Image (cartoon, rainbow, N blue to C red):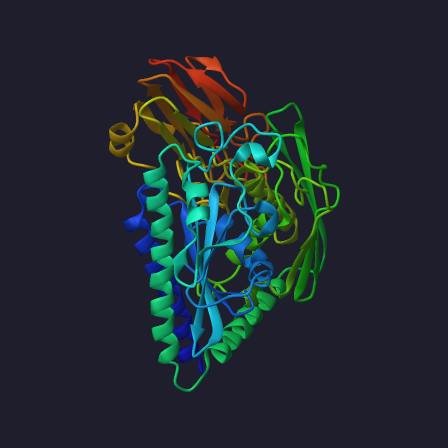
Amino acid sequence: MNPVELTLFSSRLNAICDEMGGVLRRAAFSPNIRDRLDFSCAIFDAVGDLCAQAAHIPVHLGSMAYAMRGIVDRVAWRPGDTLVFNDPYLGGTHLPDVTLVSPLFVDGVLLAFVANRAHHADIGAESPGSMPISTSLEQEGIVLEPDFLIRDGAWNAELRQRIIGSARKPDESLGDFSAQVSANQAGLQRLRVLIDRLEAYSFGEAVEALNGYGETIARQMLADIPDGEYRFSDVLDDDGIGDRGIRLHLRLCVDGERCHLDFAGTADQVRGNVNCPLSVTAAGVFYVFRCLMPPETPACAGIFRPISLSAPGGSLLNARFPAAVAAGNVETSTRVVDVVCGALARAIPGRIPAASHGSMNNLAMGSSDRPPWDYYETIGGGMGSGSYGGGLSAVQTHMTNTLNTPVEVLESHFPIQVVEYGIRRGSGGEGRRPGGDGIVRSIRFLADARFTLLTERRDFAPWGLDAGSDGKPGRNLLNGEELPAKCERHVRAGDVLKIETAGGGGWGPSP
């Protein structure tokens, strides 16, 4: 394919993913999917290699790109099928992220898959929001091994009832799953039209050309990094159970146009839920290297071919079943980014920014009282600054880019009142380019409820670079009393929860 044809093909694939996301958003029932946009859509070829993705959630997309081959090989596909799964040890991330995969057959031949992954605020855990302080996977909700939610065009009524029957609001759950099915159907329709219009090339040939182009870009990017070994370590605050200062270590080896990332030296898996499967670790790695590539780089499997990684089995970054993983997807993945960036800062100084606020600042809350309710959100913070800029305040960074739910939506749907929501002034690290400031968010409960916090960078601050200062650590408070980084609490009507997120690290010496 000539460059123009290849660019058009890639753009059309991306547009299909965007349209899938638009369908999912507009058809979803829950604020978590409809308003926060906590979902991702992608297209894969017949063997499960990534062809395209929308600019959705990095931790969703990177983990799907790493694990989809193993998923599509597990079952015998037929037209009209839709597979559902959330098992972190079989291609998922954590249980609230539920993935639906549908095959595209043309003239009886399997050519491609469309997939979407969406975060369900209630996936059957005992605690509201399904993000508990857990010590095993079974405490985090229902575990869905890959199975057909729809087979030959017909819903699996037993499986559907098992899923929605575990939710506090079954109608909302069914609405969200139906929206995911609709998004995949839209993707299949559009992808079939695109394939029909490929006159001079088959779909497989076009994908092969796209992967070759992507791999060339990736190799050029790696060739610009000096050969050598670069090491970096960082830590997680705790696991919510008692383990503190949990170490992540990386040895990054660059050899010409290839690199390998070895996470040996990372802590063993822990009792709490900050463990993650290797697919989530891969998502953090892929994200960082994708950021070093030009904006026009296609989101395809080819860009990851020169990059390999390993982590010891049974470690924090390659946990074994049934280790708890609810926070691994959201918090540990973010620290993986910090470790990779820290190593690269030694290889290509000046091109890597300081650490950002380093947490998704997860808040899950709700009640089983009548009427029952569940809500989950992530809260932004300060972005680390670098020689090229950065240092934005009050934003999501790295492994998530969800929106915040509008205050009006929160207060109209749930018995809570947002009493403060603003920038945490002075929390960014000082430097020639100061780090961004975090967020202050205070919520008053208007009825008895229960909440869970899964947060990071409360003990260990986001680091600055090149003589820039560290960002200020975050804080969690309930009625003015300090809370741990990870905790569950019952609250009464009138109680106020205040979350102060960390600032980003500064870059360069202060002028």
